Image (tube, rainbow, N blue to C red):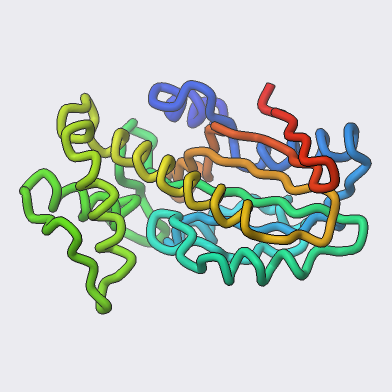
Length: 243
């Protein structure tokens, strides 16, 4: 069944694997090439606060310390520079910092994009609901440029990201998939800024960015990695581990 589910997901994200396999590959590479064990890794993620991401979180990730939760709606690192600095100070001596960041999108067993069948519900619901709502406002020309309110700060921020790329999103074959790409780029840009401004009391910083794909309650979750990089903080050398 897992292979069948993966085939469905790969119709939209050809390089996706299960999130459990993503974590296993991370552990294998860090152990083989850098002698870093899972218990030495301080883990942080910038993914959506949607409850499905807690439900479908890969169990083997619990071998790491954390995670420190950086993400708000659709995974943008709303905890800011303070959040990045906070967990950086929790890394073990001779350990490493690992940051995973991704917007998320749902895909059902039937191949419906932007929704999933959640536990105990009789019908599908949106995933990511915030992204779908912001996209709906964009398509209906209901976003006011520069409008970010105190009452809905995170959602309004997503709206503004979409508005800045409105032509690109509106002209896409699948506007929700394209909007998710826009979110990935916004998240990665902000993660890079935070990482550059943060001091880490260890030798290695590992950054993994991707698209997090949620499935129905009996499917689990998947990840299409877009970036897998380790930075030697002593030398500044960056190594691409994606291959």
